[in-house]
Image (cartoon, rainbow over all chains, first blue to last red; front, side):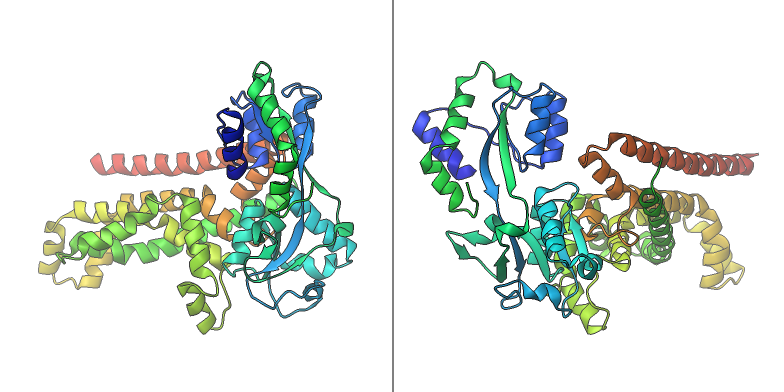
Amino acid sequence: MQKIAAQFENDTGHKLTIISGATGKFYAQIKHGAPFDIFLSADDETPERLEKEGVAIAGSRFTYALGRLALWSARPGLVDERGNVLNKSDWQYLALANPKLAPYGAAATETITTLGLTNLLQKKFVQAENIAQAYQFVATGNAALGFVAVSQIYENGQLKSGSAWVVPKNLYTPIRQDGVILNSAKAKPAAAAFVHYLQTDKIKTLIKSHGYDI
Amino acid sequence: MLTLDDLSAVWLTLKLATLVMVLLLLIGTPIAWWLARTRSPVRGFVGAVVALPLVLPPTVLGFYLLVAMGPEGPLGQLTKLLGIGTLAFSFPGLVIASLFYSLPFVVQPLQNAFEAIGERPLEVAATLRAGPWDTFFYVVMPLALPGYITAAILSFAHTVGEFGVVLMIGGNIPHKTRVVSVQLYDHVEALEYTQAHLLAGGMLAFSFLVLFTLYTFNLQRKNQYRS
């Protein structure tokens, strides 16, 4: 996002301020009048809800990225190429984002259900508040395995450390990450310009190189 | 209505807070006594270390505890050596983290209470041939009782309200590490505001009742002394 912002400011001369945080918190803040112009959500439900509740401009929703899920371990060689490690019992904790709160968490439980491993794995679950914390649990070695976002562990198509299995897309519903323009940006041409900019090929390529589909 | 999950979180929280309070009074007493009495040059150093958890934001403290408890961290190495695995995501892990987190809330009031006693009662006890242990249990502790009550209340309340640390090292496991504050937070994040209000209201009412009872009791006791 920092990279996109820098390029956008360079290319258009508009100024962009990024505020990052958890989707659920932003929802509450936006509902209570937070002065944001564009909301890039980590899911597709929250922007839809904001639009329905009349806080966002109707018809301004767009998908800017499709998140991809990976099973990851900080230990090299623990995760095999097909995710068979999930069936083994020589590890203790499986970290995932809270499925009630985070789309990646929901995708993780869906994958486990599709694989028919719910009963086997449920008692090994440790739930993180969000995907960043799931990453922390695994990175510090407290959880041997965890479902994280591909964007967290890959850089330019290369796994940064440990071992990972990129979960095949047919095992979970696509993690659509939508954005929406909020009411406060009605008369701001820069907001529309940025939304348009996000959907140019140049930016799409950049987003893809960080482990997303689009 | 409160769900079974909510009630389980309440029970777990009470268990955690009570255990932490008792352990901290045991651990905090010798530390506070030493801090109150010593003329050692490291006094300032120890006092500062004890107060440090007040400075760090709880999530930051939790993050470093997570790192320390991990298989590569110093605490993790120690627990592995003792054959008990790692502490993160377990109830004992929460207890240990809470001990760090609430330590200043016990040590400071106790230290103040001990310091307020002064030399005189101890000297009088010594002239009456009381040993150091007798002096401590029969002179110091009764005189420091208000300090103990404050320390107990603060450590209990602080642990009930603990959130950031638990969030970082708990792993949100039902019946093991999912305490009220985390359950409450989940309700809010999932936009289940009714459940959240109910749980938060219950928690406030309960805490108020406990604090009110203890403070009233403490006040009455003080008045008795005066009359």
